[in-house]
Image (cartoon, rainbow, N blue to C red; front, side):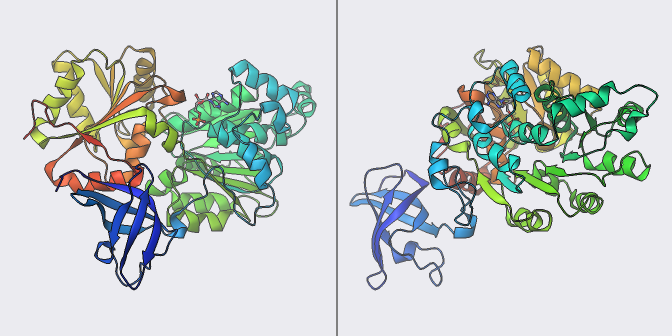
Length: 493
Ligand code: AMP
């Protein structure tokens, strides 16, 4: 028997319930795999039938490969892929969807000239898949549940049509020109609210609105904690159309009477899964109550759509269209992934050993805790490897500086916790190093998605402790491919 085993996916070619066996056609392997009823995880209710999509451990045996630990994909977990739409969806007919990604131009998306000009200035040539799909939906005023990660171009996917819907350019510019003796705060009302989980992400979204909206005359403000509120309040008082905010400070300013949400027409909740993870659910509910419930368009974006998000989406979205962009598939294929089995004590030594390689030009290292990030940085610095930590205990200025240094190349190694890493939008990260494996497999995807941006290659290393084999298996199941185990490194136990 060959030792090589890994989890993969395939389609059941045929399965005979009475005989209790059949064959599976794996996605990435020409050879059919033998399937026996004992390999079904839950004998009673798995009910395999021909055509089912399943995930299984493949084991090579002398007489041919066999499938072990079979799990059937449950329909409710299967999100719409970007080339599929919900059947009841009337907006995107299949013939329209087929066109997405093959030659759709920004000019096909009914965007107005001011917005097209800003897109050109930004250097964008073609819309990304989520932009091609979401822009027409948002322009039509429909609610949307979008499964997409940072890096897919999702900010422009909502910002561009929102800017367009906000109104005619000339109206907005006229408002800015009205003489000073009319109080401007009375002229602009907050018509768009975007909620984001982290300050970094909120700032990035605000910047995007400014870039895409530079010829529209529309104004935005970014509201976040950790800094003095006065500059934000002043901007609010001068009048804004769009507020991008993290929940805590937003509620603070609402309570102080600086923000009134009663004119909000469009609401975006970004990184919904992270919002829930960070415990913002009550804050979000409070915010939602303060907006008009009728005639409000709502968009929810999330990197993953677990059940809680689906449930939550029902409470804020009205008849939403769902789209799922899985950048992971194409991106994953161009990321070199490797796992190192290592004891906890030797992780730092392994990290230093790896960083001695000059091809690691810009590395983002993930630790489970803030304290862990600080410790790693301290030790790296002692070895002459310049690195900086980024996590929630750092001041806003320190975080911004760390990001800036990383972006400009001053810092070669940035050590981050997951929460802080959310808003990091830095191109050319050559390596992602997971000093600690994440507790949830999806986080692995978020992390490695930080490299290989815009089609560039990247490498992702994961340090795996002896008792974390199961976690690694779960990750492999999620990404539907095996992660190469590095067998010979100096610190292998
Ligand atoms: P996001 O997923 O919104 O964080 O965007 C990821 C990155 O892609 C950002 O740096 C954007 O500036 C960039 N981007 C967004 N849309 C496009 C596009 N259509 N063409 C090229 N770059 C884009």
